[in-house]
Length: 434
Image 1 (tube, rainbow, N blue to C red):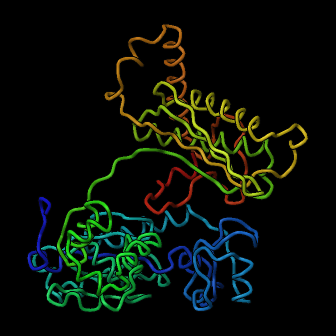
Image 2 (cartoon, rainbow, N blue to C red):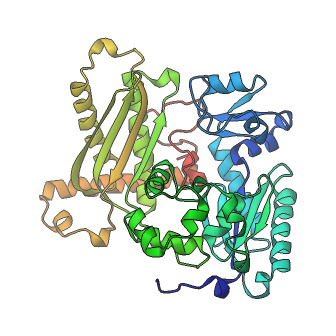
């Protein structure tokens, strides 16, 4: 099918996948002895109207899970301990865990804050040796990171099945899916236990009269392609059957930040300040990645559930002053469209704000219009903004901890603005202070 495809027999036990168990809650239990053995929910803010973003296994035993409203979680689990998320601490532990893993195996790819995979070579692929390596990785984490940080490890012919194997035994599991044993324990799983099958995909499969993993196993690659409506379905079929098909690389298409506002930051003035700060952070990340952006979008959600979003396009830029200028234009549009009045100045109005930079390009990929045909005055302003932006970045890198900022940064309960863990992106350590 693809260049580089290996059959299950050719791949053997090639991949080891590590999935940390209840990661955020486990870090909190490692850091706070009084939380150990207790039901714990990690929350984005201190209010019962928010949702759990993580739950310990003790809390999961009561039915509390990611997305459960805290007021409902407290009803389900009267002894629940709620702790405010500390994303900087989870990133710190993330790097400690990677160091512990790499004492035994090089990490091939970081999939998320709590997932990574490794390639096994030579005799490492023999079942006994693969199992011994997995146990060595577990013990390295306990010894070098913390005895309350557990992981489930899966070993299989491809990374997809190795990840699936981590779902079979939790917590602290170790499952090997050998090529000769397939499909084996896969038929014990539900469709939505498989990575890439969400509610919508499960509904699509059901319309095709596929309700179990066993039924999915027995379709053909062409049928899978038809159900998915793309070649991704065919890739999925090969992964499920143990073929090692390389994942397609993805490119950065946008950089942004969003935030559910703390209760005391929901007035128009403070929400605008938060939007500005989020955009400054996004611009800093953009420059570190050496990109320019040509479009900015602003999205806000109001307390009553109403959402407003719009975007503006401009010549490629990467300095914060250009971005803030267009953010101000978007903010004025939003105030007009939503009918905000001066009387709303100190009232709770907003719940969430998001800013995203789109149309990313490297300097060498931008057409000459930006550099050669702009009006001389505009070119001078752009050069001045970029020089000042570079100077500010140097000061941030040198002094850290908000030593320099554009405008007064809003104060949050978490102590940092915008930076949080995303499913597909692990923030760098310095994002928590820039």
